[in-house]
Image (cartoon, rainbow, N blue to C red; front, side, top):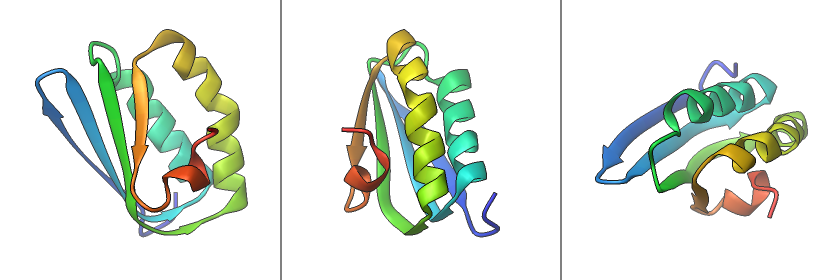
Length: 91
């Protein structure tokens, strides 16, 4: 994981909010995917805030996009917010 990558989370009623901070590399992508896998069930929406990402490495984006499809089939609505949302989402 990028040494400066951090993920903060909080819940509201039926939503999970994840705030990503730092550099997004392959290991950061796996950490985000694992968090979604472990904590994503039971929420109608999951907001992923990308405003505080500094660098998005191509490998991190690639890893996330390849594995995200599996998660989307079993879970909630993922909503990417922030200036970097389109850079990591597969939409």
